[in-house]
Structure formats: C-alpha cells, structure tokens
Amino acid sequence: MGNRKPAWLEALYVQQFFTACSIHVNSKKNEKNICCLDCCISICPHCVHVHRFHRLLQIRRYVYHDVVRLEDLEKLIDCSLIQAYTINSAKVLFIKMRPQNRQFKGCGNYCTSCDRSLQEPFIHCSLGCKVDFILKHYRDLTPFLRVCNSLQLGPDFFIPNDNGDDDMTNEIPNSTIVDFDDPMSSCSGSSSSESMSMPMCTEFISRKKRTGLYTWGRLSNKVHSEEDMTSNMSRRKGIPQRSPMC
Image (cartoon, rainbow, N blue to C red; front, side, top):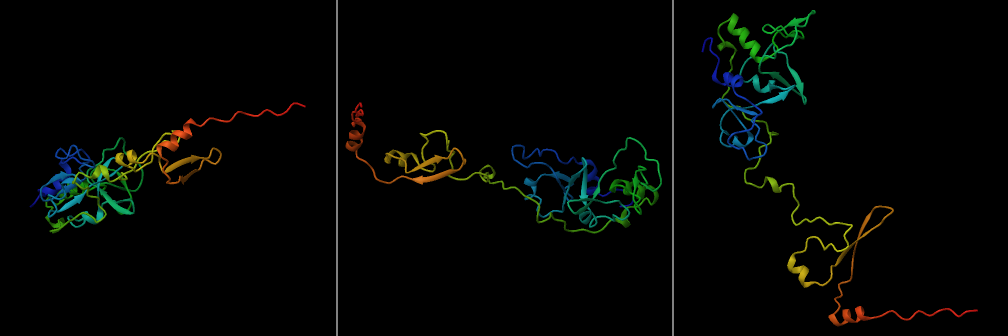
C-alpha cells in the first residue's frame, strides 16, 4: 500500500458523523455514529442490519470532536504514542487533528504535527497526527497496519426496533388520565359498551385536603331500579319542627 492511506482510514476523515441519516429521516435515533469499514461510509443504528456482516466501528463524541475507543482502533492500526483520554471508564483517541487558537509555551512533550502540549511519553495527539508523521518520515504505512477480519459493535450498543412500535414502548396500554378535581369523571379502563350497561360507576376517588393523599374505594354493586331512583328523587324533606318558645 506504500504511502497511500487505506480506504477505511480515509473514510474516517471524509465521512460526516452525528448528522441525520438520509435514509431514515423520519425515524428516531437516526444519528450516524457508526463507520462501516468495508463500505467506507457512515451509517446510523437503523442501517446496522444491512451491514451486520461488515466491520463496524462506533464513533463517539468528546468535547465536540469525533473519537473512537482505543480498544477497537488497536485492532486496525498501531496506536502507540498517541495520547488517550477517558470517557465513561473507556480510553478513546481523537481521529482528526484539533485546531488550536494559540500555541502553548512551556516545557513538556509536544505533538509532532500540531505542536499541542501532551503528557509524557506521548508524541501524537490524534490518529491523524500519527498517520501524517509516519507518511512524512517513513513514507510507508503498511508496517503499522494490522489485519482485522471482523469488528462488531459492543453488546451494549442500542439498535432500535424498526417494526414501527417505537412510539408505543413508553405507553401503558388501556391507560387513561383521571382528573381528580372533576366529580363527573368516569372509571378508567372501562370501554364504552360497559359504561352504557352499568348505570353507576363502581369506583370513586376521594381526596384528602390536608394530607394530599388519594384513597380508592368501591361502592356496592347493588343496582337500583328506575322506580327506586324515581322515588328517591321525588322524596321531599320533612317540615322542620321549631322548638317551643319559653
């Protein structure tokens, strides 16, 4: 391969990550955070099933820059002398050279390509800086490349379900919202046919003003006939008796 970069390495520089996937525009979690090393393109989690037999490299974000896990990148290329950073207990490496607003003046190690201050014994701040250094001084990248026939995503990587049930996963079936301030609210979970057949609701909600707790109770299942209800409605209060005057 000589002084040429492999296609997958060039794809890490050219492809754009963490942008919406043009194939799954209307899907959730359609951010392109995976690089298919065999197709040399960036894909989203919805595209994984099409590339499931390819070498897949997960791209992450750290301080607004693209990074990859050191454990995954070491399977593809020699990553020695590249300064690593820790994200969620995992070491990551920057892919591209990061621009600097001003040069740091002081003692210590500096990046061989961008003069960024580094910790000892590192001399490269990113993968791109090391590749540029190798091509400039050795003119051959082949001894630093490693054979990798299989590279899959981690078991903790979330792959969304494309069956169209994503919107229903967070909803509780047969659930209703009961307004505790409305005394005419009906029972939750009952269908329209059941509410027409039963004249009274078998559940009621009582609210305690001081404690703010809601207690649930049940009324008796006794169903009054229409005549009893009519007689109860037509019943009048008795005439009040006044106390005798002394």
